Image 1: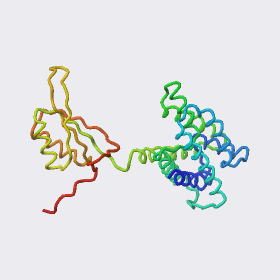
Image 2: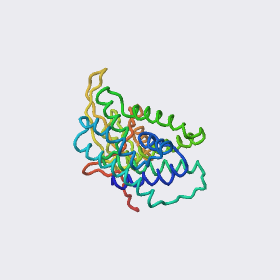
Image 3: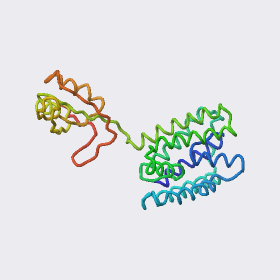
Image 4: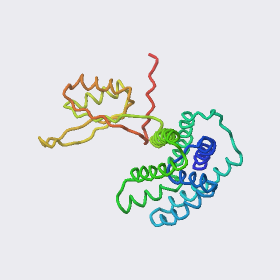
Length: 277
């Protein structure tokens, strides 16, 4: 899957970004700058830049992460070289808006698959991990800052119009990476604190056919024990659940949480199949 993700990323880089003169963030963006000014093939500069980064990050990466990083870097370099040799033209008549969308799709889906299966393509990911462990700086902030620096340097060979479409590609890229990593569905976790937890739980299991758990809690003000109702439902079932709660306890407290993934024995996120009658 890491190989497949790198193949998609490399195809988008060669057939979309390079073909339409769009920039890129991180180490890939640096390789495009070197390609323009020094005519160095990105397939080779990717390896050259990542070697010292991986060497520096050796002590900070686990053995498994190190192996995946090296493999991801080599795979991406290979596919960049391969798609230059076996070029697949994507004719969009140099429409930069479409190019920006497609660049984000190819890059986001490719990178999302790589990250989903525990891989990485090296580059600024290594720097971000080091700063997070040593300085406590969140990886997202480091990656954003490094991308901003690289994109600013890319203005040395791009005009402002091309840079704006590159930012469009970056936005689509980030959304798809998050979508693939978080899962192909959205769910809601609901916690209900009520004086009638049993009635509400029975109604949820009977009417919505969802599993319910009781959470034991203690009120901080009155210091009394209570049972909270917890369940995971589809977003479209949220209104129905609120009506159930209101039916039995109009003053109940409801907390709705975003759930990006739910796994485990006896659980299925799929909507329960209703009988015809």
